[in-house]
Image 1: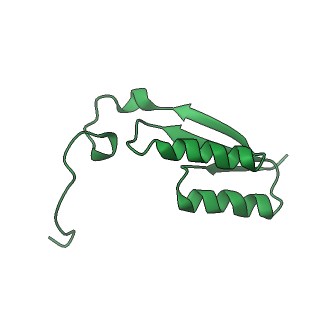
Image 2: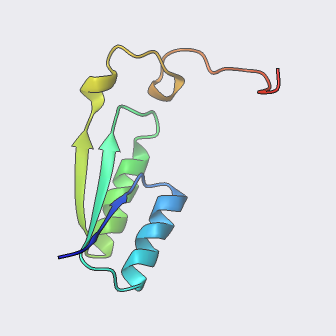
Length: 87
């Protein structure tokens, strides 16, 4: 048995890939989203809606515990770096 697993963030790129896989007749398709405590968690809901709307099996991996002690702007703590990479 072959199939496709798509890491579905709910953002534009992964959503387009999901639709492309579905339109291409890839089967079976499983969509996997990861909740790591990101600030933009509304994308998880969008991922779920897209997968269910296409009849694709969708799973959510709760990985928030892994990131509890990490200071990171994506998680709402820590500073967003400023500057230019060349510097």
